[in-house]
Length: 458
Ligand SMILES: Cc1cc2nc3c(=O)[nH]c(=O)nc-3n(C[C@H](O)[C@H](O)[C@H](O)COP(=O)(O)O)c2cc1C
Image 1 (cartoon, protein in one colour):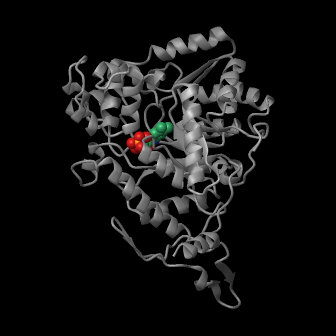
Image 2 (cartoon, rainbow, N blue to C red; image 1 turned 60 degrees about the horizontal axis):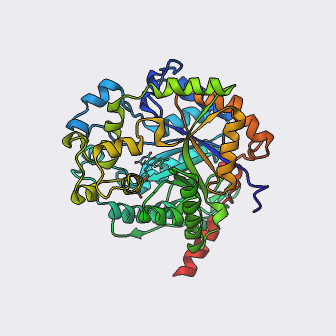
Image 3 (tube, helix red, strand yellow; image 1 turned 90 degrees about the horizontal axis):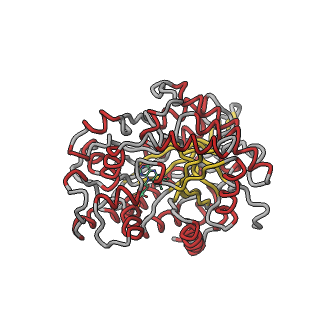
């Protein structure tokens, strides 16, 4: 595909909680704090749909971030992601207030059962007419294990092995009903063709699941698959399954390298690299003038508190950072235990230290501040210039836009940035839809093809 005809994919990075990605965002003067009501989420959805954003997606965590200091007091007192609502329920509320925007959410392969996940997402995809995506995650810490009857979080690579088998089961169920299985002939009493409804009969290492699945196919075949693995094992998983991949790039050069390597990995899986979109997370701060943008940035930067980063780093690395002196290096054994390998490795690489300290993790990762992700700040023109540079390099196919205030960030994106990107021919003028796959320029899979491939592989 020529770079001329490529269109940028923009995704809003949402949280079903009291703050955005930036924990201090709940303290922002323009944030509206009705996050326990459907109106909060519906307002954001309508704003994003006005801006033609292809998809809004929710991250998820199955526990409060209570590893730091060994309990929940610090996180609750300061509102550091102190609320986490079930995102699939919220997705439906947003879907009822919109008709075109894609809606994605995160569900864990480590703590849920595949039949349950397959049914929730297939049902949502029918109710939202083919607009749904699933962000496949393996989860991050022992607090989540403790909420689901376990004691310890599973080991890193075993989590991905379980996730691979999870996908075999989910995909198997999603392909149970062939596209033309439903007949609906009242006269002849033929509801559906039983030869076009297949039973899975899965017997594996982690799961047994028989079927047949009880939900027919949606207008986009089945929900879009999203993933964000960063480690070698995580990237291999993404190359095999994902259609949209979230990444964290700290420089354009690193992004170009990783983008190229990842697309090669997708091709090595026998898949078309153009059918897997890569989107780095970023913060966008856009103002009517450079001064206005810088003023917004100063307010945002003043929101972060030291506790924000410490709570959120402990959460994702599955390690209580209060146990360590601020300038004490972590031992090799401690580093090996950290849960999110990509996050750990980035700090090791960027600090230039084999054994970084707590200070290195806080300062290099920037977690809990806008420094955590690439920041595009300035006028619509200068922000569009920066995004265009990344897009055409190419280092990405689009961006996951994290917010610094709700719904303020997305109002600025829709009102100021999108028209500039559209003017340059970098962003679509309207939804190609009606389904999310069509809007993203991705093919709609057919169940019969899946069965033919499976048969050929036997
Ligand atoms: C943009 C982005 C969003 C993510 N959202 C979630 C999430 O909602 N829940 C979760 O448990 N992990 C989330 N992760 C973490 C990844 O799913 C994955 O666990 C992490 O990158 C560790 O993978 P690795 O060990 O392969 O590096 C996210 C990562 C990125 C980059």
